[in-house]
Length: 341
Ligand SMILES: [Zn+2]
Ligand SMILES: [Zn+2]
Image (tube, rainbow, N blue to C red):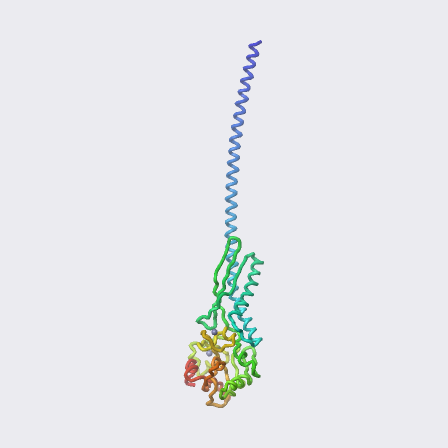
């Protein structure tokens, strides 16, 4: 009996050992499985992360390109907005008949106001914070064009932009306020869409300046709209028996001139300035008389404190009436190739 028990005890021990070995195998499998699972999870996380990073990078490139496009669009709008400001200032002077005290500072005020409206628009539409202002207006070697310099700074998220942008702003097709500013207190001056008609105003203005033969300018006319003369070099104005000069006067062109005022100075009521500017001519009434002398018809001479005389230059004759200019023989007659007229 005791042996049997012992034997049975032995058997139990063997069973326990076997169970124990079975458990060990199972544990080992669990550990391996767990390790595999963890590795798989880690790998997945790494792969997922890099995919997310890749996507974020693409997103950043897209938003950076978009940002650049938006800023390019903004910069393209600046010269248009500044040109609009110049036109509005010129209309203000024409309507009020009052010259600017400082046309550049008036222009800066108007342009800055428009810029700040545009900045608000860009903030509302694209959530970009832009600050900008007109910092300088410079004359150039082309008297019909100015260089406007605008400081811009912009921020959106991690991106920022700061620059001074130069724009060419011209005064072509704007109204010339000089005649109305000088003749406004004399009766008879008016203008249509292209020209001033002086009536008696210019003659009376010249009489007050003590100019002889001022009455030759009764019912004279001159251009309203600034247009650059295409007949360059100017000495060709005498070509074709004066036909070029006739075309020039019929179209009311303006010419580059060191003595004539630039556009911004015209808005200040100046006929001449220190900048490289331009001039046009005042056409006296057509006449059948000849050999006359009166004030030189360049606008910077007529509307100046130093009016000098010009001799009659007949550039066209029709039905016994001469179309004339009064030009100084050694200055404007030579410049425009009219010495033989
Ligand atoms: Zn011309
Ligand atoms: Zn000027």
